[in-house]
Image (cartoon, rainbow, N blue to C red):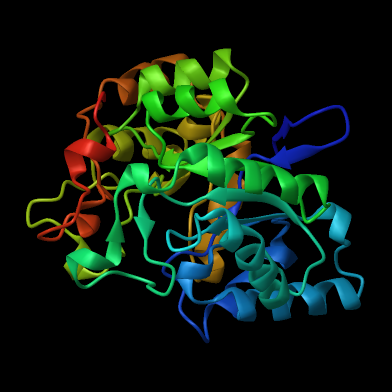
Length: 318
């Protein structure tokens, strides 16, 4: 397994298990199987609705001595209804209770989008808050206090474009460790990747396989397939690998972390083994040419009538 250095004391496994879209009753089995295979990086979030089940499996694995807490890297996220300073710590404490942990390795702001405090997902315009209603500095200062209190080791963000990431870094006391964004050959985000490398911000790619298992309500009618692209299929055949392994190996070769989701034991193992697949320079060039600035998860679900948010506003300079 490839690891990225975090600081002098810690490293993070470059390939982790995503838990978005893993439903109750199946996510626990997926995490248990992943731990047996060798996964030590688990990516969670309260909006996924499954942290309690994940926590039960983690606790059982530590109780039996299968893993130690120090071997694990557990990430979770701050949902959009808890960005106000007074809500940040209670949100993390709830996540810790559900995951049955004393601390997180990484706590991320999930989206640069604000909801009213009692709303999980808005149905009416008044349930949104404008982006400037809660300054990012206010939320970030509350996140920094969590590090100081030992409730999480590191903090970062998700779905921040280049402008927002620059603005945050310019005012942060504790610098963001991570930006987690959608990334794959159809959406390579070269400028963001280059900036993160220069500024020593790690970048995690979610939906690295194209998220074809999203619900139909989140899909567009004409979505392209990553796994079926001829270049990916030809590269997989060349290396006697699976298309998913090629996509994951490409992400790792690009210097990013990847967090594929699966609840299928054989696919969990295949994804894990992708960390050992070394693509040739010619493969990387061919895959690089697939760029089409295409987002599978574009945030359109925040752009309902009357909302202050839009797809263009989320990704304004990309």
